[in-house]
View (cartoon, each protein chain N blue to C red):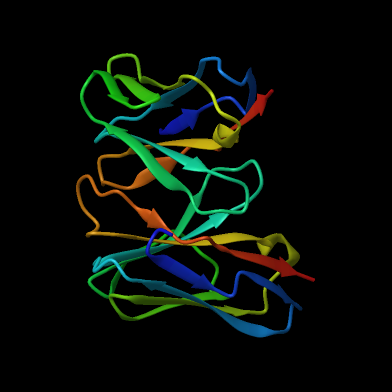
Length: 114
Length: 109
């Protein structure tokens, strides 16, 4: 138990569906992250929020839309995804987004796009 | 440019010692992390090195040479539960983590 929870743990969706991934951290951290993890590839940073403000958007397609209503919650809204978007989506949090900050990860959502 | 490289897979025997290497290239460096990730689970923090040398933490040690762009994770007295992927990542000049693809470690009895 890392203090970061993600729901759902598994998601299967069609290309025309709309779904949302949820992340919640109970660590009092101020920075939250979305990563994509594909088999045998490095973790890809998608979005970073620091004190609820988005500070990074690593050229992520607009079919992925993040939302950070407060420092404890982070959402990833999904719309008209492609099969190549199938991956493990990991949420992480850290004290803030600067200097040395250990990131605490959630267990991930395994997404399959049909 | 920036890159980071680690072996894809390694196999070791229970009770033995294994060293997982990580090499990187970057113009700006603010430290290197090692994480452990069991299949289907979250990555968990193992170590952080920003100065050259060896840092020991129980059965696990991490080494860094900044001049060589090189780090390794040393696992001693291997146990079956150490079967996992080990991810190295460095902090670049913008304090962004640049991740390796991970090394899958298989422990055999």
